[in-house]
Image (cartoon, rainbow, N blue to C red; front, top):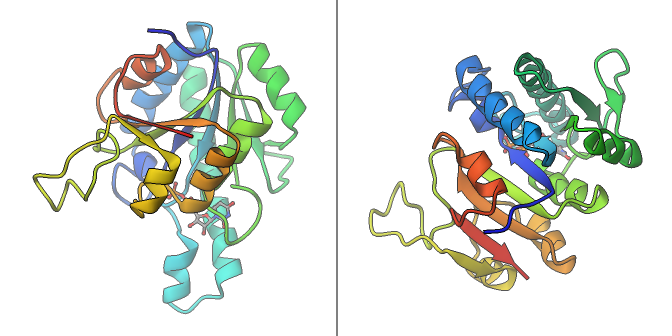
Length: 236
Ligand code: UDP
């Protein structure tokens, strides 16, 4: 069992809302505690935060909004999640920095990759908000991009209540089978929907591993960071 030195954790908005709109501070606090213990163990952590618990551009578009504007609302939602995670992680005694792809100097630093790396080297957890700052992207794709640019070893895709990648939706098909390992090509050929295809293709082309694991099981962040074989490993 070999652990990682620097990881990029992707937390979807679903996690922050505990499945609802808005914030579930109890859930966020538990995750913050786990993130803090990972950082205290000496592992460097960057986190890309989603925003689906507030707005998803595609859904607002279906309700009549222009897509690009709706996507900006989606990105702004991620920043609220970042600030909540920052607050609670610091209460667990670990320093953090939020860096956003849309500049908002009063609440966060701008995204500066070399500075993000420096923060991580100093043991600060860096929380990336506002996605890529560009409409028509998703935070899964940003997770791949940030992991590559800040030279993380792996992307850890935390999922709410799902153990990994299955051959069909485990909520709908009780005999769905979970993969322990999968190549990116297999993932794309099967048209699996656990992370978006753009992010998957970016990770594949740059040979960056991804682990999908269940965030709802307490202690799983530390387990996956320490290299315990949980969830589904997707590699090139
Ligand atoms: N978004 C965007 N560009 C980005 C990242 C996010 O336009 O680079 C918008 C998009 O509307 C998306 C929303 O922000 O629906 C929330 O992000 P995402 O759906 O990736 O969050 P998650 O599904 O992880 O909660």
